[in-house]
Amino acid sequence: MAAIYTHEREAGAYAAMPGLTTLTHFSAAFFTLTLLTDFFYTQTMLVMWQDFSSWLLFFGLIAGGLAVVLWLIGLVMRRIRPAWGGVVLQAVVLAMAFFNSLIHAGDGWTAIVPWGIGVSAVTCLLMLIAAFLNRRATRVASY
Image 1 (cartoon, rainbow, N blue to C red):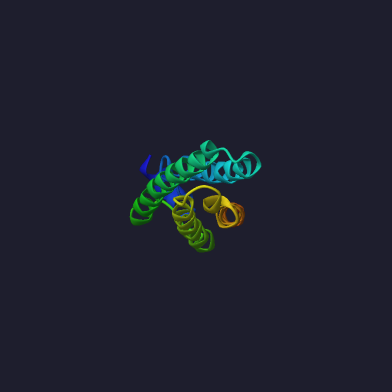
Image 2 (cartoon, helix red, strand yellow; image 1 turned 90 degrees about the vertical axis):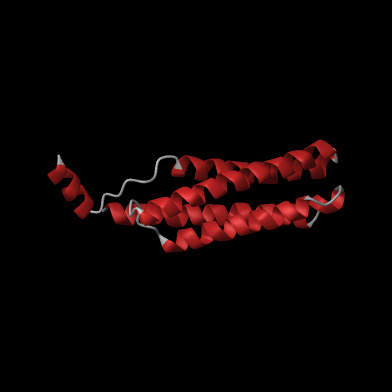
């Protein structure tokens, strides 16, 4: 058994930290739903949608923060081999989401239009680019 583990380790088969992918996907889902609820707020002007956006940002930041902690543990334990382009972009996404959370702390229409929904859209675009970079790095590393 030990020889197989050593061979897999030498071949570059790194096992990701348990829960890291799930937390990253949850964070992305929360930030995407924030964009959707921002759009709903612009269409209906119901404060409920602004509150949903604030809560979704909060939970997205919590899930993203936990993912960062797991990623750092995996990096220290050498369980993961990071694709630095995607890592930096995911850090920018978390910073943008935190900034967006501060914008959404405002009151009413000015908390969403134009900066809140704009930053939500940029955050979603950066998440897509980071996911593409991570996916590409994973495929290149597996060949």
